[in-house]
Length: 490
Image (cartoon, rainbow, N blue to C red; front, side, top):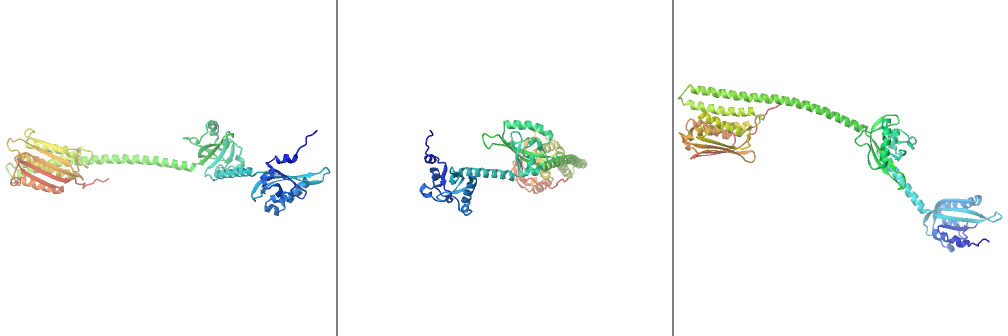
């Protein structure tokens, strides 16, 4: 014996579905708790009302509820998915099924209506659809060719830039192996690289440090730059790989042109440098020869003056000739220093003064036992425009001291000191501990010419001088290193 079933109680237990009965005109004659939960009406509010109250205005205006009943009556069933209305006027997306009910004689006695709320599914579906559209938009808007392949290298998605770059249609690429876009000489090796990447997928540039080539549909090859990114839409899904491909043909061409230009430029620079070095060597040799000849000419003039002075012994002019001879020798010594150095712009003034004082002592027959000359000049280099007047001035001062400051067997010392001040300025201090002299003695012949020459040289150096005579002599000069007045041009 079959157990009796309380169908009304059974229907009320189903709360995920709105289940209710309609008469043949579409009026509601039963209502379950699921219908109350989904649509918001209690049973008293809907009984004997037409079920069209659950449809939006646009559906009612089109007599859509009535048409569904006609379909169900004629075919036994009508199904639709769309928007439904709740009691509060809000909409929900639902799926509805209307089933025609007949008596034992086959006469239509009403309809059963079942509705399921699919709002969450629809919203999720819409979100997924939007995400897909956004993803597709990002792929399509990329400036590079974008290709998505599975772990086996099969192409699943391409963008318009891919079609434009490679010349294939979308249909020709889908489901094909990615190696079809490579020259054959690279395809076999790429399969191995692809398998290795699948084991350790990460974002990276493909073929770093190596030349990469791709192949178009027409067979032409071109330079590319490829970056790889692994993606997974779901932890259970197989890994997908996004390849961004950029045509670098133009860039490679420009880089090659730049390299060629650099190579040509380097070669030209090398050749020009060799030319300049050769020219510089020739000019250095020429300048050395010039200074050498000037020195020789000055020494010749000095020798002529000595010969001339020897022919007129006792004559007062001899003193002037001998003084002029020594002045010329001091000038020749500067050219000899320039001849010895590779830098014709400056000379080591300490070496010059040492040699000059040694020559003067020899010319006067003075030994270190009688007069000791101390030179204190450290790391000072003068241009020829400064060295010449300064050297002549030192020549006059030392000559004056050796001739007059130490008569007879008197012993003594001479000190020369040049100190570097600020702003290219220098201080020259000269003193001896000889017998001293009055201004009258200093200006007597033949020293008068020497004093006049010193004053002229001080003016040439644009200096300020202080002198004192008494127990010895002291000469102090502040001056500036004169800028070059002569410039050698190539």
